[in-house]
Figure 1: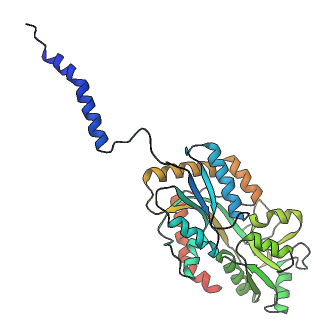
Figure 2: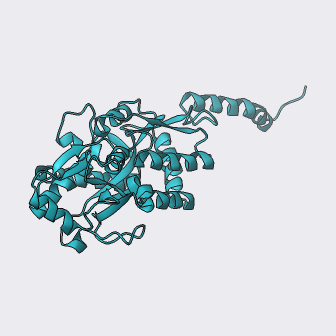
Figure 3: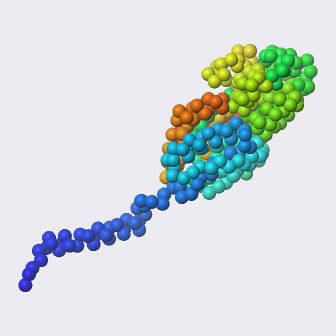
Length: 326
């Protein structure tokens, strides 16, 4: 009779033991090799119409994200305009927090709009992925306008209080327009538009005399000479358009900046947050996006989610006093 050594029996039992361990780990939720986030294409909601400055920013960014292919699925831009950004922001934050619906939104619907009206979303219940771009606002006039400077505009507004028309709209434009009135002792006739494209059309058509917008919204028409910038609300002249004088250079202490952030509903799974941070962070910091932003008239930010969320909180805290100016 042959005798099997104890060590031999142990070696024979090893494959069965390993198989049992694998089954136990799988039952306990060990990471699978496949099937992680994302499981389908990702929708990026833009709360303003196609052709707006933020829409152009979103499409430039998404082209890079899809071109790099790091996400493994495509990102698709979906325009959900209306309500000064509230409609698209509601659609973004009301979505299932699984990372398949995100949004590129200006800070206004998160920091300012909830201060003035009832919104159907919690502006603090968000996951912030990245701060994409920043943009100081500027005052523009038609290319043939008699107003050549801020002083000309102030003189005209004082000569006929409430008669000079100024196009604004979202609070990121309405607030600096109101603050300008306070700083200069003027009063304008305010006309609201939902986005830069509508303001540009009204200016070129001679329906309003002054417009408040971002540089990106009027870049093409400024280059073509159909619009002219009176002043930009940055602390210093910006590299993209050094010829545009600041309000401060024209003796009006007005500074105002808007910025665009990628957000998602609160409670994103860790893998979705990490993937989105990686792919959007990489795209924003790419030379290709820097070039696209320059052409659009935007300053690339690239601040991470934590930094961007802190900036949102700071602007929200300041909003009460700013809105009181309006």
